[in-house]
Length: 164
Image 1 (spheres, rainbow, N blue to C red):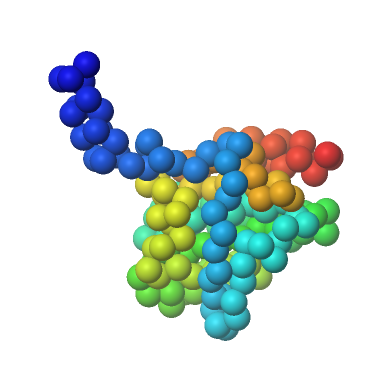
Image 2: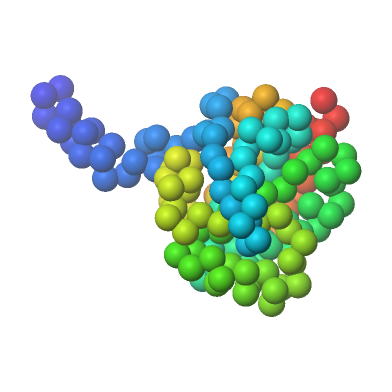
């Protein structure tokens, strides 16, 4: 056991996102971030809604693929009680704004986290990473990466939560 302990401590420090990742059953960490116009938004203000929280960056190819899906999700499900929040982690928020413009997804609720502090709270190691959060602020699902098959799973999960 004495030989194993240093190895375990090393692995825990070398891969914190694998060991300390926020996952199902845990409370989603609180945050306050600004949108492109400078208006503050917080997770706490969404407590009566189901939240689909997505972390993305303009340089991330799978993120660019997921943004039109997020925009459709927001447009089609917001009246049913779903709030889609896309948190951009580019060091320069204008890079995120430009990508949303290019993808014609400017109606997608996007917040900007150039310091990466909120991404750190959520232990983001893969882009994109998304969370389905219930009305009480508890994480129901964590999704890492994005491909076409991800859409169907996310839609099934959201449908299930909205029925409750």
